[in-house]
Length: 131
Image 1 (cartoon, rainbow, N blue to C red):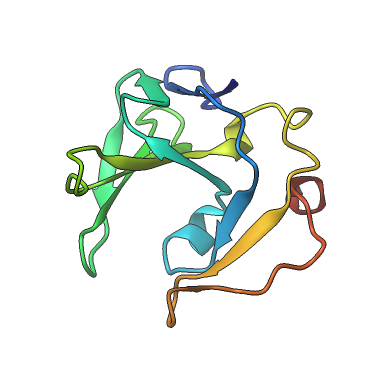
Image 2: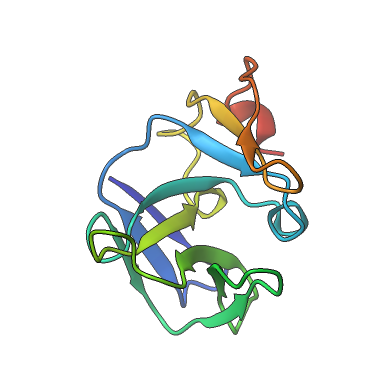
């Protein structure tokens, strides 16, 4: 299990399973936020607590980015529509968690700006991108 909280502590998330990799995306939103993402399903393996505000992507509107209205930390995102199985895809910003359980996980680089393709992996881990 992995847990994260915003800077002021008002918003948090829990990811029930430890991910096997973490994603860095270069889309117009993710690169501005500097988030590192771990994926799951809302209400299944991702639980959140606390009041958030949300920003809906202006292009397709497929994702709602949630952040703490008090300190501004981006905590997670939620798909704007249910998937085929009625479940809602979500991701948590692991930069809000403790580094130790995820430090050696590999980084997946997702080219979310133009091609929407996963890029070849390099040898970088979360530890390499932490600061």
